[in-house]
Image (cartoon, rainbow, N blue to C red; front, top):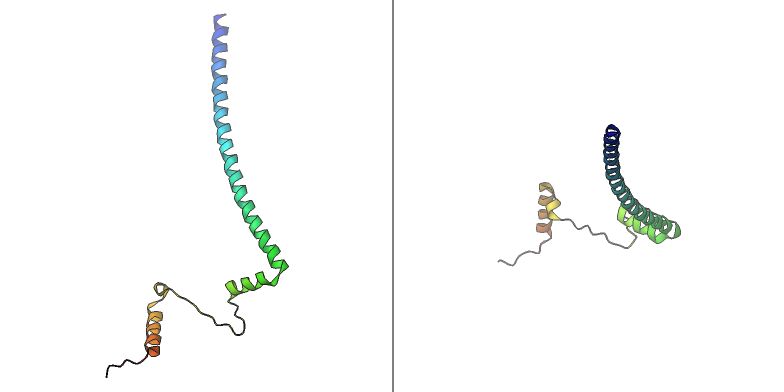
Length: 112
């Protein structure tokens, strides 16, 4: 009788260990599900933005013109194009050309 009680006790402990092990895995899987839901929400928002852009491009020429201006540099007749460049992004050769242009366009000084 004593051996049966010991065997049942050992089985109970083993079953309890398995239950706690599975409980830990459930928590890990729940965390992965939450991460995937967050990722799905971000992708759904991106898809909505892309869908709105497609609808806009199909419905009117304003969106097409805006895209052509930003991505292809579209300039209409009668418009002037100005390119603003950060001097820190220029090479030494480009800076030299810029200085020559400035000197050539500077008004003459009244020194004499």
